[in-house]
Image (cartoon, rainbow, N blue to C red; front, top):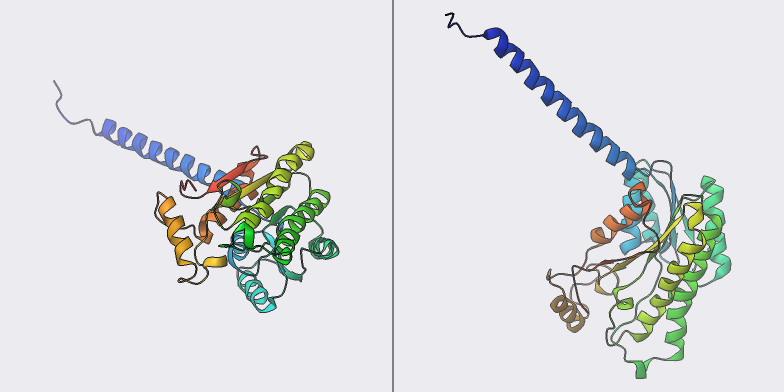
Length: 287
């Protein structure tokens, strides 16, 4: 009996193993490319209100990194807006900055007109502009404070979403940046939370009114965001910071990147069948 090793079989088996390895890795590469394409925002045009700083800035820069052309909006801080424009230009994306106070309908209309003039279309709108006021009991709010919060957070968001519904391309994405105070009442935030709650209902209704166009309308409900907004300074509002940290199982506040991650999902094809939803980004916090 011939006991010589079967080198031909071993060579054949080796070739089969190499072939399987190549096929598996080709499948993995193709899947990666597929998901990359679904996540791509190449040639999309995104308008982000209140995008000179904080959450708006993080979202604008994330979208630019994914290939979108960006419309930065600011109310007063031109220097910060110019810095974001510089950052995005360095990424190779096209970008403009438009000064507009979202509490004024005419300026919202101007913002959208400038976006269409520069890029010819609008695919993504993020209604992010807003102001905060915390640690103020219901009994202490003044009429002036009430009007300021509602003129920007409620009126401004309403008419931003209205223009978005009118101007956005079919298959577009509309995203409202809400607040966890719309889900969990927090003492000292009655007027702020109230001003952010009305647009949540608008998201529910608008998602039904324009869903037939393939446009999705969703909101992101972030927990308090560290290094941004009222917590831009590390030592600001220590009592409130502790209260919020104690409520979060993950033991931290949100970061702008946490919100930008969800904004990326809602803007991409990965969320094409997600509509009329409110996604909490709060680490499991319960109040």
